[in-house]
Length: 249
Image 1: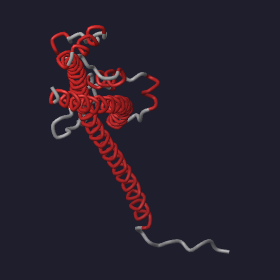
Image 2: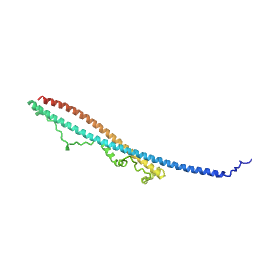
Image 3: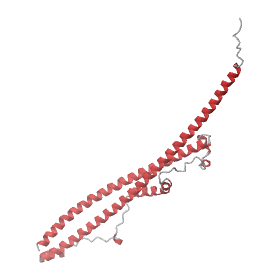
Image 4: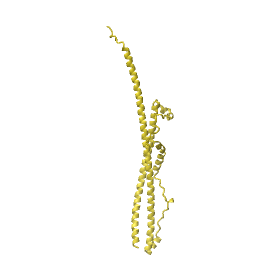
């Protein structure tokens, strides 16, 4: 039997070569497109982590400001409590004098009655108040990051995220370098993303410590307010009682 019919198309071989060349060119173009797409998405991810890091610094700065304001509030409460204690002591002294004026018997009673203990005046007239130790440590740790916040502010600009900034690549160890892609630009993006994620993890830990310190400080100031409220109520009753005694003189 005769073999398959021979093609008599003189351009058959040329057509096959053209189709093969087009496939190779298409594959190369697709590979370049995928490379550009990977770089674009890596750059977008690096930008996103940098913006998140800037927002984290902003939140931390607000947390430190709130902590400082809470400490100032604690100072005010401490001064108020000491003023109430001083008023209570002065009121007791006034009651002793009123009893002396009312009768000779009252004067004898006051003579044998022990004097109320006098509170020592605060140096410089201002009590010292520093807040709880947990909040103090959290504030100090966060203030150390203030320079990084200044770099990311204003307008939450990117933190050294330009395409040409690959100066930190040489600092990566050989083991870490093997874990990154071989492409220099892609490796730089991946390293930047990892660094930003590490900073975000540390920042979130500092924010957590700030929140716990604020919670402890608020609870302590709540106790101080309850104690101060009771003292003020007692002082109000004693003032009314003293006023009534004075009117009876």
